[in-house]
Length: 319
Image (cartoon, rainbow, N blue to C red):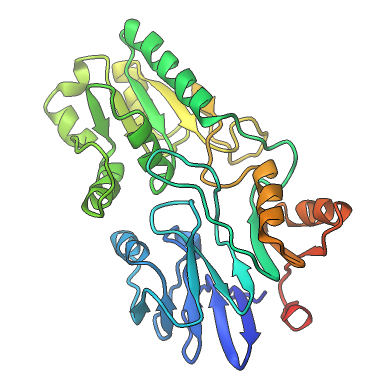
């Protein structure tokens, strides 16, 4: 692990995993298009899916020197967001961000057998076990129905890339439906890439036409705090109710944004799914990254695995 990201040096080649800069004379693998995984520099060869490249471009990150496949590198759908992949090479599997649950149009990740596993553990503590998706869908539909009967408009909130598309897909049957303008731009690209999302109006146009005054309605928005000016406006002007979707819904983390209702839903594995991922991989060595790295590695060690957190400047020891 370096300041630029994870560097693997094997069989005379250098592979950078989700590097902060795409460096020359090596292979740079970009797992998906969330901003914390996108490289800033464009001097090196980048291995990523077409979807990742197009979503990155929409978000202002141009990926040059792009290829979708390379010999000796096999990509596996990581189930995180559209276009997200893990990569297997030299018997090393790097998960990137990963989710093994089916969610709407997203299929759960495929886990290959490997000798060395490098896995994220965002929710790598036993307290993070998410409810069954069918139960979550039932709960939210009942909540929307209850609020509709009271004439309340509802704002469904999730990260602009990933969660917003999932909830647009899962709850797109409600009418009338609107998207926050930024979600509409991302959803429009997903539609272009073949994802079955409803093509509806953005919030600025809907408000300019006076449609938001005709309550109730459902709007899909990015995850925002209760102090966001738009949320304040929607509450004061239209008496809107917010429902936030996040894996941190039941935690005390400071970044678990407040909403009227908070629903546990994540684009990452929960604790039990992480354990199952490790088991399915058959890995003899596990490195933990991103999240509760020490806690999860410790739990794996107690279960008999050879596991440790991948820490910065520990590259020579590991590879």
